[in-house]
Image 1 (spheres, one colour):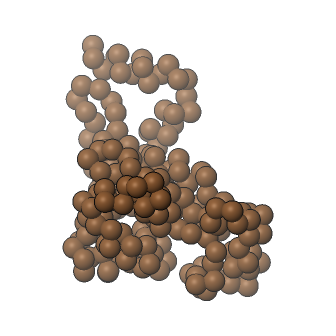
Image 2 (cartoon, rainbow, N blue to C red):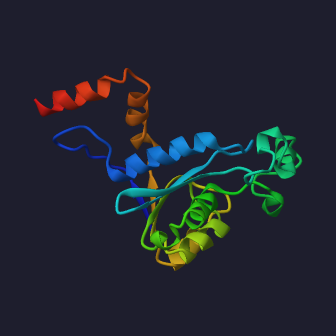
Length: 192
């Protein structure tokens, strides 16, 4: 079942993001590390309001970065020889969701994904959806649709999918680039 969040509520005591917004902001920051030339995606996996893994899309460690020509499929897409969603099996870039799941396995957090929430800047593809279901993710929060997403598969697995309105992030993103003392001042003013 897909839930679309359209209403945002602020804490009555102090302005701060709710948990979904907070962790989606982390996913937005993670996508800044992407080395893919066609799409930047970030993902975080969270359990009990604690971030246990981060991932972004790009070529595997030790392989030439996509933006340096490491993925022939992405280069073909930039040249217009391949359309979005085509020849994905030839792409060398690992998706952000897959990277986040593999980081749990690599660093010994594999069991901690059961019952976790995944935040991703795009809805997951079918392969990443299968991985998320297999490792016990029970909830996903996404910002945007992906052309070949696994929405139906997630629904069949009774995995909750929440589509967050990107507008929820804008006030917090603008706050991040302002004076570092501004957020402290906002908090103090809300207490009075």
